[in-house]
Image (cartoon, rainbow over all chains, first blue to last red; front, side):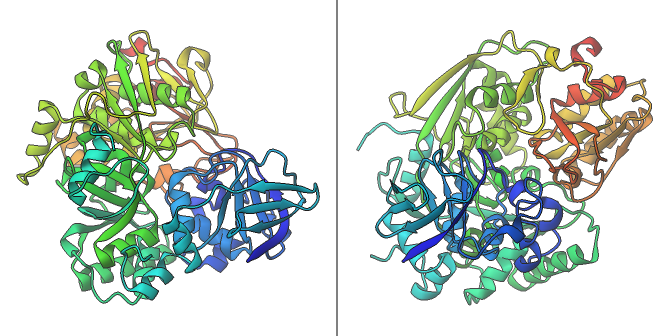
Amino acid sequence: MELKGYSHKFGDDVNTDYIISGKYKFSTIDMDELSVHLMEDLRPNFYNEIKKGDFIVAGENFGCGSSREQAPLVIKHAGISAVIATSFARIFYRNSINIGLPLVEVPTNNIDEGDLLTVDLEKGIVKNLTKDEVLKIKSLPKVMLKILQSGGLVNYYKKYGTLELID
Amino acid sequence: MSTYKTISEKIFSDHLGRDVEAGEIVIVDVDFMMGQDGTTPLAIKTFENVGAKKVANPEKVAFVIDHNAPSPSEKVSALHKLMRDFSSNYGTKFYDIGEGICHQLIPEKGHALPGQIVIGADSHTCTYGAINCFSTGVGSTDLAIAMASGKLWFKVPQSVKIVLEGSLPTGVYSKDVALYIIKNLTANGATYKAVEFEGPVIDNLSVEARFTISNMSVEMGAKVGLMKVDEKAENWIKERTDKPFKSYEPDESANYEEIYKFDVSDLEPQIAKPHAVDNVSPISEVEGIPIHQGLLGTCTNGRIEDLRIAANILKGKRIHKGVRLIVAPASKDTLLKAMNEGIIQTLIQAGATVVAPGCGPCVGTHNGVPSDGENVISSANRNFKGRMGNNKAFIYLGSPATVAASCIEGKITDPRKYL
């Protein structure tokens, strides 16, 4: 499956407090209500700039900070199809895999705001159509790909009724 | 496969009954799991969504209400009720408002022991590594699946070692050491990795002071901040539980991605400046910056020793006019001890406001949201923009001593002049 959308470019060390501020996340678990606040401390009105299928593109250590799963959930709910970053923080990484938000780890210094991109997770390729460039994605461990293909850990567990690794 | 192992590789190998090494993805039984009120409601929703009928091992699960304790709003109250109802239906352990911060309670109640694998739906779960427990922060879905199945998937992490040499000067504390390490390794310096701390500086620290360092290991991206168990740690644990445990030491030739050595004998008090934890300066470079609020507490530095240090500085003094000092003890036990020792009286007489044990001011939910343009000096672990509930405020991080001294003078102050 190929994902296609425009790039929204952020810097290094985007933490989960920036993705969704603690002052909102503690009072509700309704992701539609939370999504409108996505990245608002960094870029007010960001939610309204997103077209369904767009990408968040960032530098190093995206998603550092708290363990709040609301962070990848609001990104997914806001219509972002994948996050592309040079590197990701650990808990954010596993939370995203668990909830079925694809993460793409490639160097992003040459991707700019507004570039039109496609991502093919199976083939492991990011194409920058604006700049006519192709980037190779590091392949995911089998378990993680399996969880992502099931649509997240919840669906995986529902499907297989166990946490054992199914080959 | 290397026969020499890190602490993490040993703990995972023993749990699985076979040799594993860093990089492998494994599924293991979790010894204990914890969720707080910011993450558990979502875990409960997910638990119900997967159709789980029971919690695999309710005695190995604890919920803690600490992020909004007591509840500041109707909506939060509804989420707290969801947690209370779930806990009483499924028989999990429950620590309600006023009991304290999860990362103080879990080790304090003997739920996290050396050699165990413990998860918590909170990023600072890495704290219990100070007592040799492989403890790490996870998300709500992880907690839900672990409650249902008793297990979770992990990547056995690569390890880095940090050796702390020399001896700490007076007025310089484990918090200063943690900030100094993060400055050197950066916010991204140990991402995905287990950190093992050792050396004479760690040996000489109290167990409480060691928790501060392990607590902050996630601020450089680490999965856990592990230490060995010495006699001090063993006594600390045995005072709290009679459960048996097995601790692990790394093999000398174990495989570390990197070994860092720091001599801290000449270290000054350190300050993390807005808006990043790795934006650290020695205090001499930031002295004199005006402050409007101080926060003494949190899972980093809200323990009895921290309150003692602050009270010794504030005894017989008054905080500066126009400064608020908020004190949130890490747990009910900490608060009771502080009352018995007269610390709470000292702090209140000096002008402090004491709030219920919990996380509120640090995470910006209630109990002290700063105003636009204000500067806060805090003993917490994070100073991100908006962290304390206002994205136009500025947060500086330092030791409890630095917080106390700065509140007396109304500006960032080197605490050593008050010792």
